[in-house]
Image (cartoon, rainbow, N blue to C red):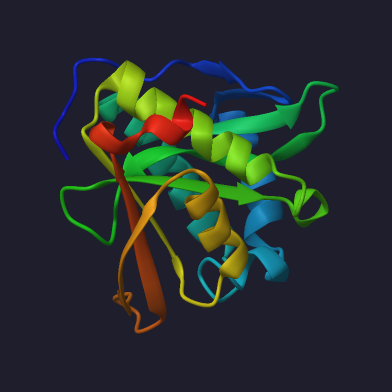
Length: 182
């Protein structure tokens, strides 16, 4: 991942959502996500401990301070928290920037993940200046794969994650980000 002197904005807006940089006060949200078995089935495969949640929130805060990128917490314009999404150094693909998103199950199937991902990709290319951004999902996570495809990301490969779970990688480069402009 090429370091950029440009930092992602603290707040973002999409057509239906408002996002703000994740903060220490968002621990209750992280715990809610980390203890939801439906969400964890597609992420870590198991419910996270309170300590694991605290450590992850600390990593997210550190990403913002050290790299100028990270996750935004997204809410509907009326105020209800929908989920989070953003850009981060990929923990599975050395040197790559990854786009990621998680929604509360009540908001699945409503197009919010696509909206969040498009905005994160746009910021990654047009504001921060990345040349390439990847997305990774479990092979069986058809909904997440569909989000990547709707955003114009291209399937690159299928291979197991370090924990042995079958995964897929999609990517987009600045040169092929035209779907974000429409």
